[in-house]
Length: 197
Image (cartoon, rainbow, N blue to C red; front, side, top):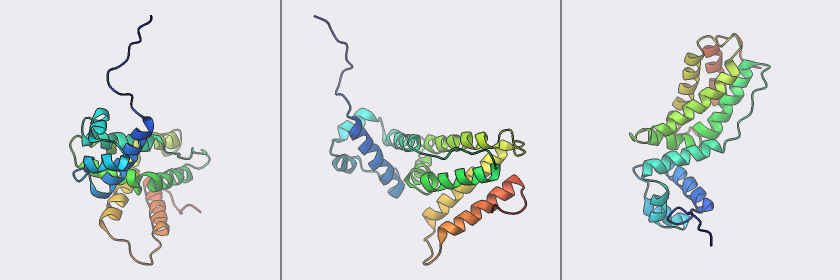
């Protein structure tokens, strides 16, 4: 008879892990890491607190894993390489909608207040920087690329903070305003003249 070597403990259900990560991301985005109640999270996910701790050593680990999973699931448009400014606009718009103004960005900001959770925000910054480098490399904007990338990233984080701390004005078309602001940022950072058409 053949012996099979198995890791001790229960097999982890991927569907349960996905539920935990999604619920945790939304809870952290809404109320912050310190107010994340693992007993309540376990009930909502249909599991136990012990099942959470079998997967993650702490709330910070759970939060980082939730941000990482959400970031890995993103569908971001590839640059078409015909117009660097337009490619940057498309990329930053996609990130603004799917990361910075979505639960993933708000959760990462909350996690950045925790000494063990700051890696989540850093991971988003790295991912965006990698994609911006793909656009700016071998263009007239390659010079001072790291500074340009930091300015773009900082602008998106500032929008996130503004949206989290300032109530929306009734009747305001916020998305159009954000698009116009983003175009201004791109043109200032890249040193371009007229705005994108």
